[in-house]
Image 1 (cartoon, rainbow, N blue to C red):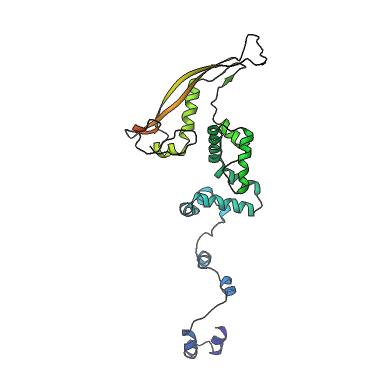
Image 2: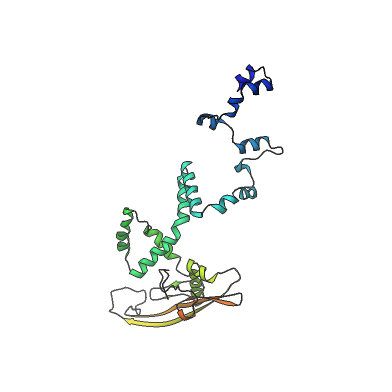
Length: 273
């Protein structure tokens, strides 16, 4: 282009008449030339009047949220979490990447694994043996110490344990039970809970006793013994929330349910009515 323009004496009329066929043809540029050219966005940003744009890391939190709004609305949570983990690993921040992965996938699997242990009455050794299937690309079973952490979350506060008894305040037990139930995703999908929801729960209680052989268990008090056992149990039957003058139900009383799912064990799996 520069050579043809110089050859025509930098005269527009002579340039157009001498190069009319060349100007009407198609030009093909190599990839190296195309990559070297500035993009349209770069040209607009470079030629736009006013205050120059700041780098993303120099922007305030409000501006950062505005810039990534479109990204959050168009990309799924799983894609964002995986992309974040990959970028952290590329930057050499392996610990941060592991934390992101743990927060995104660990918690539900711990509860599911704990439900399997309780339902199947597995010992620690049995669970660890079953967990070896992870070596054949199954990620259902997290490490047992993580399952123990999930198990601790099932205990209410205020438990008093002695060498012959274990007890907890009824209100603390019910409060903790309701909180745990309301964290189950199936319950949230049905009840549509909010901060101002009025939640009610129906429970049943009962007691049972058993006798067994006396063992050589040493107690602090000589008259204490472990030959008899008596326990009182509380079981939740149904939980419902009053929302907009209507009741959203969830529980084992099936003929009241509008939905066709029910949680009938601690495995949190939907079952047909």
